[in-house]
Amino acid sequence: MVDITHKISTLRIATAQAVVKVSKSETIEAIENRTVPKGDVFAMSKAAGLLGVKKTPELLPDCHPLPIEYTGIEYTINGLEITILVTIKTIYKTGVEVEAMHGASIVALNMYDMLKPIDKGIEIQHIKLLDKKGGKSDYRDKFRRDLKAAVIVCSDSISEGKKEDKAGKAIMSKLETCEVEIMDYIIIPDETEIIQKKAIQYQEEGADLIIYTGGTGLSKRDVTPEALRPLLDRNIPGIEEAIRKYGQDRMPYAMLSRSVAGTIKNTLILALPGSTNGAKESMDAIFPEVLHVFRILKGARHD
Image 1 (cartoon, rainbow, N blue to C red):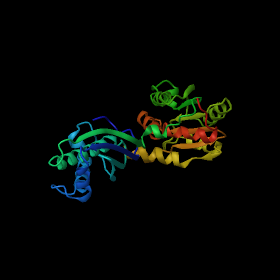
Image 2 (image 1 turned 45 degrees about the horizontal axis):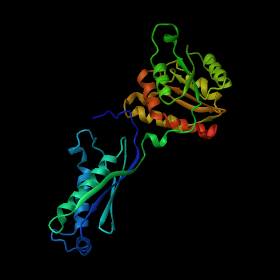
Image 3 (image 1 turned 45 degrees about the vertical axis):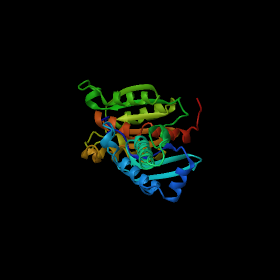
Image 4 (image 1 turned 90 degrees about the vertical axis):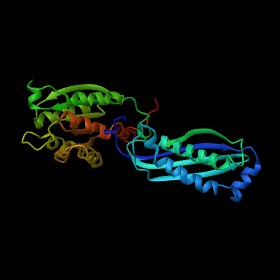
């Protein structure tokens, strides 16, 4: 199965349809009057559909088992056609489109099985996904494509050439996938004065994002939070909480990191962990959704 461990859980909704077309009006009357020999077609087909939804990952090898938190099955009769709508909801890392389509298919097949003794001309048609919500595409900022970022690596050992930077490069890779321009990338030592100077400099030069990596731990030289917080006009604790929650779900030591998020005027300042995994996971936790902040700070731009 596809690796989804990097994804975040969101409310996912999908609606699928199937159409069962009978060949005579007497079949519709039998369904409505509950006189079909095999029983109540709508009730039994709904039960079959519920089972089909739950068993989707048992039958389709690449589907992830996931918690189904709501399944709604509705019928509409129009002439000789019965339209089946299946709506599914979950709060999880991946969508429920296949489960909805599978459920609609099973409902339709069960109706076919129950009706075939009284109608030999039944057809199953138009099995398709009608709507889905809650995936990453729903939360991607679709308007601004003019954002610029400065990436600053805070590390004594890397600035002295004793280690290679990987965290900063992981941050830049994520920014590039989000179509954010990298205006600068530098490595500096863990010095309060330099950290503050660079934040002010890049803000004045028009950076929309200034992302620090490193110096958020608990050693004596980890001073990035102390350097940045006095400069911030406003903190954004929700971003900090999202980063720590995402990290804590993957590694128990994430609770010791002191990530920072806030603004200097219209510039978003982020201070992320200095480890490669810590930086990468922090970016996965909040990007691209965090770019929505610029629709508030700068307004929407339609490109």
